[in-house]
Amino acid sequence: MAVSSSPILSPFGVNIISADLGSSSTGLPRFNFCSIQRNNRRPSHVIVLSSKSSKESWSEAKRVLMEQYGFNPDEALSEPPPKSKRKKELKEAGKDKQIAPKEPKPPRTTHKLLTVLGGKARRMKLLSPKGMDVRPMMEVVKGAAFDILQAAGGCPASLRPGRWLDLYSGTGSVGIEAISRGCSEVHFVEMDPWVVSDVLRPNLEWTGFLDVSVIHTVRVEKFIERAKQLAGKEPFDYISVTPPYMEVDYAVLMDQISNSALVGEDTFILSTH
Image 1 (cartoon, rainbow, N blue to C red):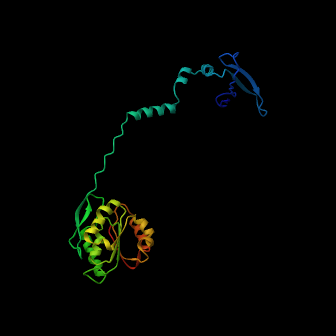
Image 2: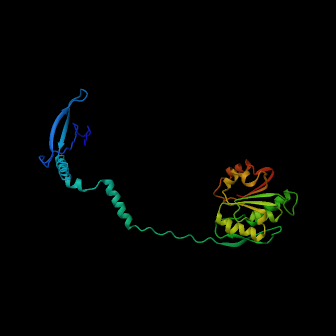
Image 3: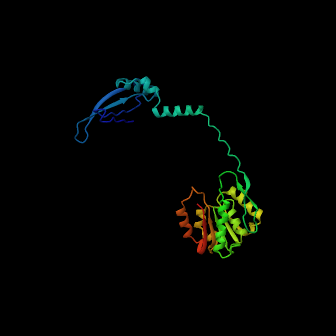
């Protein structure tokens, strides 16, 4: 093999050549000096090191070279490289460190807290998750909003028949209120499978509205992008938008909805924020 030293560290080049010279060779290396002319520059000095091919002789040769250059061969040859030493320390430290097992999440539960305010299912209780996973529209706000929509449709006693889209439906309380008050069909969009299976669907079954409902377990953004494929070619008569308050940009969301195929000329949009 050949190793050339840096011109900054040494005024001459160093080449080390290992060759098997047979039994007549001594255990220690022999040095030969010669000069090589390179492109009209001053001659470069070369050191040729010959030794036995055995591992022991080569190790002894390295020790001799280190002593000549002022290194302690015992320290240099016994101490592992910095990176290897660091890896070993990290590995040993990891053996003593015990990874604490993750605490299992408590099971999600429900309670009957919401109420249908008007129409066919009036006063029926609806399921909702305990905790803050889903935050339904406040009943006072919901009642006032539906009273306004009924008056705007020309029939204060009920909603005019039509299709309702309940985005971020959660418990389904808004869409169920719409069916109870006269809507002919409601599409529910909710991305959480557990909410769909343990809250929304049971509420629709309990109120008897499952047959006039369509559940889409998908993100609202995806639903808007694929509006024609998922909801049909006709726009909705009503759209309710009740997202998690801190997790959406209302300006962006309302722009996406208004520019989609979901909205027609006579569409009412109910948004809470």
